[in-house]
Length: 131
Image (cartoon, rainbow, N blue to C red; front, side):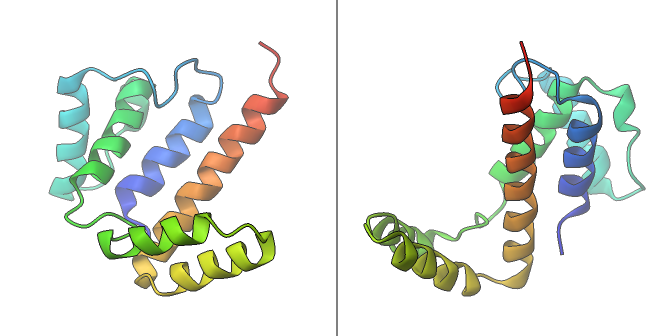
């Protein structure tokens, strides 16, 4: 239940962006980011992401997430997350986080899991990469 835009942008980043300095930090050209997002949202197939700068692909993903009417972790859960993050016992903290995540709608759970796995792959890559 992960939006197509997220799936394709993440896959493109993992295929050709892993060795890019500034990934998700350097902004893509605003015009390209908007054009790419519009192509996805019009729903006429998947744009050829190889034609776009990797920073535009990242920018498209970030812009899409910012534009959601309700964030992946709804505003009504932020207080619960804050309280859970302050639990000192790691087992109880993890259990509380799992309980909260289980209350999210399934598309939010799937998308959150997909993005977290992507970010973990980035971290592992960068930790193993010699600059």
